Amino acid sequence: MASFNKVMLMGNLTKDPELRYTPQGTAVVNLRLAVNRRYKDRNQEIKEEVCFLTAVVWNKQAETCNQYLHKGSPVFIEGRLQSRSWEDNSGQKRSVLEVRAERVQFLGQAQSRVAASGPSEETAVEPPLETTETAWLDQTEEDKSDAS
Image (cartoon, one colour):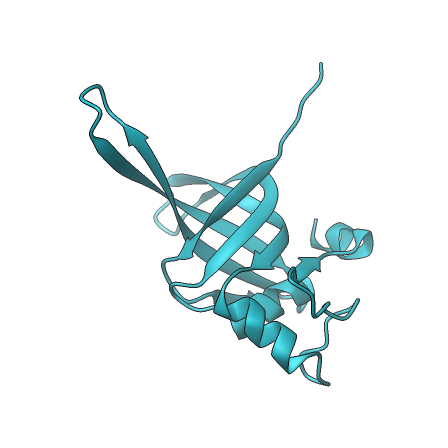
């Protein structure tokens, strides 16, 4: 049976990034994202609906997102859907569907700040960020296997 799991989203952050570290020291950040959709209803009136999502970013890419993004930042995220379930402190089963980000592109001012600042000792991203129109933050295959 064939399957395909790919998500591409463009929207704005609804909160500042939430950076934390796993017990093994791996960086992980949650990006809360609002994605708008405009459409015309039966009466040809323009309507807008908003979808709120969480994108999870890992490793060095997570630290870079935390450094340069903030509430309101526009981003383009490419990744896959991932579901998790667990039991909370009161014994209730909980579950969530989120986007596991594989690539994050900063849009607008965040992109300009990354390009203008360039990599430093503290913020170096390997490979170094390009100072072109697109500043993709890709994870290497090694990073992806570490996070799984």
